Length: 191
Length: 166
Image (cartoon, rainbow over all chains, first blue to last red; front, side, top):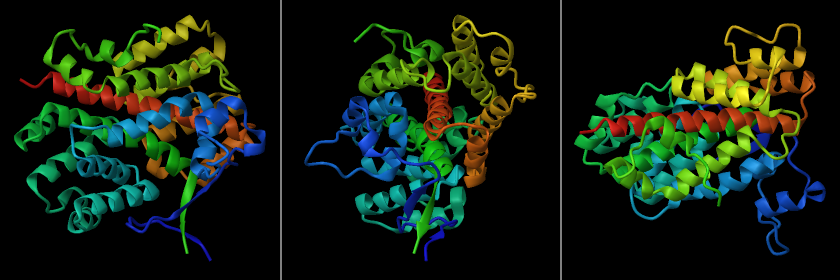
């Protein structure tokens, strides 16, 4: 029996939408294009099929998401995941937190950082650089944003270059967006 | 691509030729996609059950909830140019809860909740929208609007802090 996951975990749950995903049989040409449906690629997640109801935003959102998380240069991919995790903690998006915490663990080949963050939040004992990154992400994710000049200076003091800071702003903000979809339009289930 | 205004650059005040402009140019792809999503969320070609005026007015509320005065002014300008009147224009008033209009009341309630405290949203909140007559497609459109504007406001807030660096 599946049940709803309420605690942060690195075991990625199943995501079950509260609204009906688009039925591919009813998809318009624009929706198929945004979904990149081809005869050899008909596997699309329920999440993306839900977002396909608003095809005009989805068309831009998919490349934007990939660019923010995977663009070359700037902040390391692992540290971008910490930006995602910080936002997901504030917004209590269990699903996003699980996906991006586990991705951090894979990229960094280290599980201690996420374990500390899940246990102690912003009080986690982690490296000064990761702590500055986490703090900034958490504060920027509050509503209204709570990040101030001292948090920005902490990033500089921790050794982040301006290109890296921009990538952190983008990944943290991106999850202000993603969490507001994933957490409000469906729920995370585990066996 | 058309030469549209970049809302974030205008609001943050990224001076051409400045160091910040050079850093942001390194992610020009993201900034362009951000502006394109803004246009898709606020003034889509096919708005479904959410008019351009309603979108601008709801975005105004989101800006107010985020204490983002510059965005509030931006969305007010969009609202004015949409020619909204009556209850639709009143959506931008943070003290207006939709009054006797069940659909409007549900839209406002949900946008306020998801902008301010998405962590508190549950299945019941989506059911309330469905009970107020929204289609699933319009629920997704509404969700993208509040989620995107929340993102855009944060990108601008972060860039403004970067601008303040010595």
